[in-house]
Amino acid sequence: MTLQEAIEARHSVRAYKDEPLAEGVVKVMQEQIAVLNREGNLHM
Image (cartoon, rainbow, N blue to C red; front, side, top):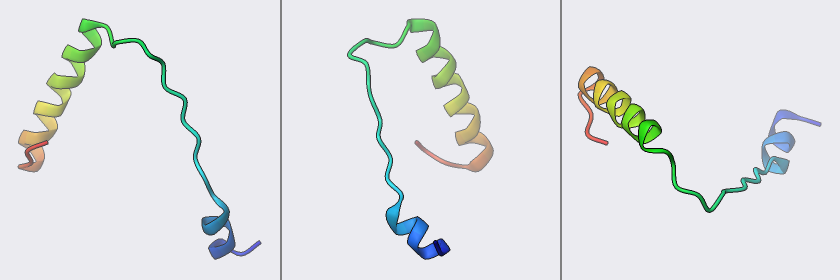
């Protein structure tokens, strides 16, 4: 299989849970996003 064939054949399957994230997890993620936004001069 060539690299191009592998890229074309690749697919991704995700399964999501119908559960909210814990407040602590959300807070940590928001803090990290803020840090990365400042470092990269971004707004995400």
